[in-house]
Each structure stands twice: as C-alpha cells, then as structure tokens.
Image (cartoon, rainbow, N blue to C red; front, side):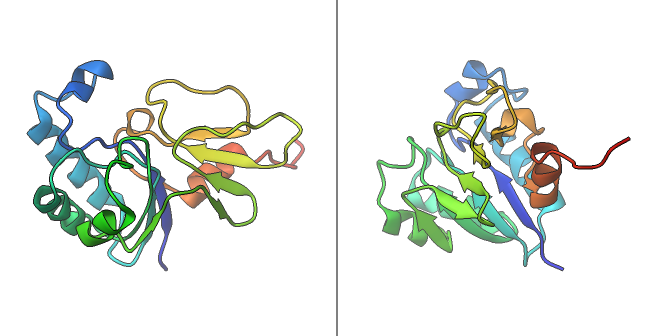
Length: 170
C-alpha cells in the first residue's frame, strides 16, 4: 500500500547551508548523494511525498536530474527560496503538483513552508519547514526540516503519532 511522506529544506546545491546548519557533509555533491539515498531508502515509486519547500538552488537541468532520481509522486509547497521561480518552472522540473499556498491535509494538518500562527486552543497541527534546526514548542507544530530527521522523509503515521495526543490511559 502506498505511503504518504513529508520533508522540507533540502537546499540541493546550496553549499553555504552546510556551514549555516552544521550539516555533516564535506561538500554539496556529497550532501546531494546522501539525501537522495536517504529519500529513496524510505520512499517507494508509488508513494506520495509532500516537500514543504526550499528544494533546490540548482538550474533546471540539475534540479530535474535530482527530482527524477527521487522515488515517489512529488508535491512541492513553495518555500521562500523556491519563489524566485514560477510554479510552471517547478512542474517542468518534475513535481506533479506545486502549491504557492499552504495545503490542508486530512482536515487537521496544515502543510506550509514557514510556521503558521497557531495557539494552544487550535485543534490543528502545522507541519512545516523553514526553521531548520530550531523547533517550536507545543503540539501544534511539527518541523519536518531535514536536519531534525537525518535527511529522511517521515511517514504520515510518524507525524500523526507524535503530534496527536493519545486518549489512552495507562
């Protein structure tokens, strides 16, 4: 059965992100290869993947080459570093769907690049990227930036189980 997975902020081709976020790679090429390997280790060809922005700093040819190597049916929610290119550019690069706006998933999860305003009384969870190694407190936010998850996409069930309070009593 096909899975649904989530990830953000790969920054393919962005050499400076290695220093900015203390990523454990010697260079951008090693970073690219490791991130592709980790993606493909958990994503099957029929799985759906929501990428929550800041995918690539590379040109069309190199970006398309990476998208083609990644398993799954890919949806991109544009991040701040993706917005310099049109929605059609990203479709041509190989994403099946591209959204300029947050997406509501399963009536409960707000998928966005940047964290959205949420308060503790809102019965929703914001699955987001953008803030890399930082983390917002509380059950209303779930950061899927690559730095938190060993550069590996997370399944919907992993996010749901971590973010939604259990009603079970000990």
